[in-house]
Image 1 (cartoon, rainbow, N blue to C red):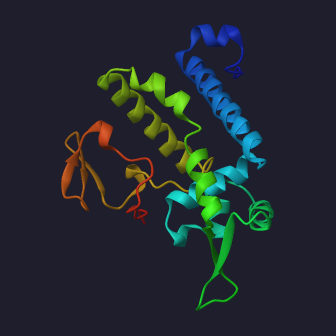
Image 2 (image 1 turned 135 degrees about the vertical axis):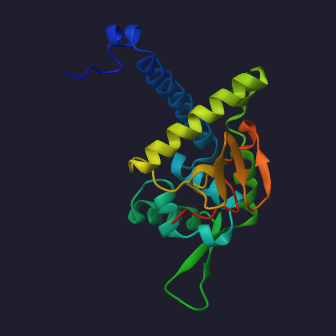
Length: 201
């Protein structure tokens, strides 16, 4: 019989269970910080996440279908959130000149202002990370990237623009290498969200 990681006896015996619970606590911190931000802007957490995503990503990624995959939500749910953002004049539709049924979403001036401020909601999480040693940060980043990669492979999470899923990434003789940059990457240089990501076939 498999025991839950939330079972205290299980936690005390297995480091994997303690890591799972620790990650759950951190995810709770993200939820709290995002909800606090949503109260200030009178927007839902997903609406804020959409604004932040659009602010930092190219127009080709700012479409309903892509956003649906990005946030692991239905197209209907994303569409409803976008409708609210449109009604508040925080985003506009940019219709595709080739396929008029398709459109991307752009931020208005006010939308950019809110997105810029909201994107700082993780500051209180970054501050304690800055106090870690370079080695601790490297180990943490590498472990999290491997976890995300495996969760992606198993279908738990979808779109990932990380080094491990990029056709430009190679791992040879213990070295991480980027064919696009034509250079080796250190553990701390591995990317979680790369603008030049090309999905492996």
